Length: 99
Image (cartoon, rainbow, N blue to C red):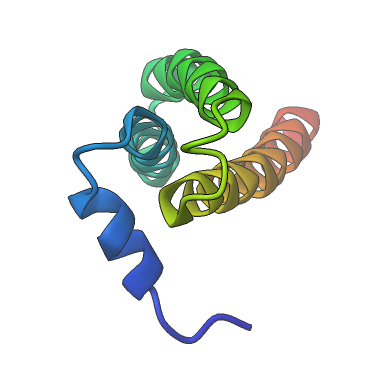
């Protein structure tokens, strides 16, 4: 279990990596939308997630960038996005079934 979120702070400060910025933007937007129950913001996070995937793919194809720490942290933040999105979808389905 991760006890430190320093990698996330480093990702936020990495202004030279488009994939880092895109993945963090997607993750934060999804978190905000979920915490405030805003479906429109969650929809925006899906678009940002797609942008982040394209940025990460581009970085992974570049031999000079592929092994950078920012690329790894981008991939990790997108993994967190995917796991949290599935939790949100499962919760939403249960709520819809209850209603």
